[in-house]
Amino acid sequence: MVTAFLTFALYTGASALVHWYLWRRLIHDTALGARTARHGTRVLAVLAVLPPIAMATTRDLPQHIGRWIAWPGYVWLALMMYVTITLLLAEPLRLLLARGGKSRRASGGARSEALPQKISAGVTESGPRNPQRDIPGDEGERPAEARDSSDGSARPTRRVVLARATAITAGAVATSLVGHGMNTALGPPRLAHVRIPLARLGRQADGFRIAVVSDIHLGPILGERNTERIVEIVNRAAPDAVAIVGDLVDGSVDHLGRAAAPLRHLTSRYGSYFVTGNHEYKSGAEPWIEEIGELGIRVLRNERLELPAFDLAGVNDVTGTDHGDGPDYEAALSDRDPGRAVVLLAHQPVMVHEAARHGVDLQLSGHTHGGQMAPLGLLASLQQPAIAGLHEIDGTKLYVSRGTGFWGPPVRVGAPPDITILELQSRNR
Image 1 (cartoon, helix red, strand yellow):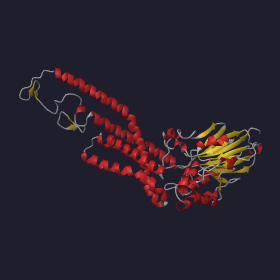
Image 2 (cartoon, helix red, strand yellow):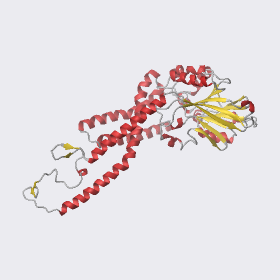
Image 3 (spheres, helix red, strand yellow):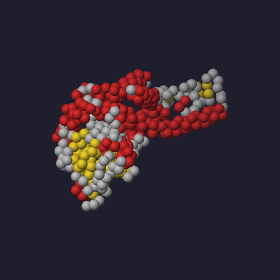
Image 4 (cartoon, one colour):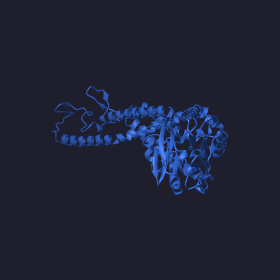
């Protein structure tokens, strides 16, 4: 409870700071007029509360209600992120021009002091004085909204022109990225093929094909049709086994049971297997474990089974520790034949360090979504040893799927969804 409160407080503070920054750059600095500024401020205030409302409520709502909250909240979250990043990237140029403006004003002021001051009854050498035009220096000293032109009409200052151009550019960049990202996220996952040689894999398992599916994230946006598409792609590939490595759902069995139901149609020679992810523990792990079992998928809860010429094991996600249901590597991996290769299903890549200590040959994970929206992968890499693809860590091979779904914004930038067919290869063939 304390952790959840601190997380919410941190997010709220960060969100308030970001929206203040957006207000400053998009509304205050662009000087579009008092009425427009008031309307813009109101709109930005409403947008600011949409993401936290979506995060706090949609998990507990039926899909047909939750989607009306999730769509605007999460799409704005993505737009907000990319608008903010673009504006921040433009800050050096803004500061450089502002510094140049100050230098010009300083030099202009020095020159004005050297000019003959022949003033009598408001008359100069060139004629009657115009107080509005007689102010020395650059237009940056003038009011932010406008500067009088020679014909008496108002025209924007250089600073305002730059602010408006930057705001338009940021909006265009964010809209383009989010539009492309939505098309990618909501489109079909690509089918990747990866071959992985394992030193201890027996000849009988040479060519064994595992379909790795992760992070489906059924919820307010992704539902039954998405699950049907995943099942169709997997079955068309005809794998020997299917491994679903966590984060199937964002919501309860009551609300999402129907969305998960097509998984009962997964077909493979040696069956389908599942391990919990962190989102299962947020959605009610026990009811979902029971529901998944009824769909004909075996849930590996810190246990291991024998497949031809290698062992397949699975451990609970580390989040389960807070629920009395954490990973138990000893239960899953002890008392096994050391001559046989072992493939471990574990939701988070960071679990590979413990897996390596227990002699695991290959760990299959998800969790990261490949970063989902660049450059968030840089943040994920601070916590996880790998974000996507095949790696070797402490002598254990690790394959990280980008996942088929998404969390939060229905957007993927630089991280297309995937389903991977892993082909195991024996060194002894």
